[in-house]
Image (cartoon, rainbow, N blue to C red):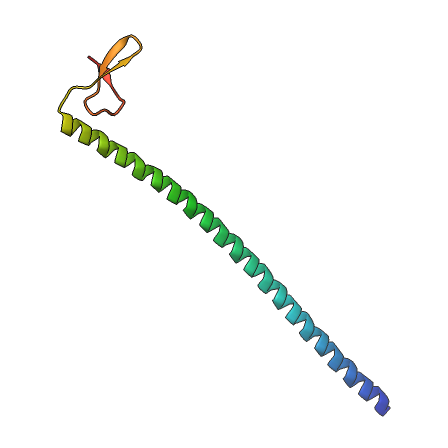
Amino acid sequence: MDPGIIILSEVSGAFEKGERAEEKRSFRARARELQLAALKKHRENEISHHSKETDYLKREIERHKRSIKKLKRRDDGGQVHTVLRGMATYYCPLLCGLCVDT
């Protein structure tokens, strides 16, 4: 066998190994990019969810504070509160807006 052919074959084999290694590096880099993009999107979704949840809880806190104020008004005054709605008068024992006919 000609020594030139052997050397060419060895060089060709080394070149192919280098190409495969570069392909693997490229593939791993792309996979890492995709993973980071997916993680970023997931974190953004979590932030959005928690932001909405925070807003909801703030509204609930305000609702409870209003309820406490209404109870305090009832406790402090000890009076009967009537509300005129249209042509009927309603009695509201808790000032809750869920009045009943008197």
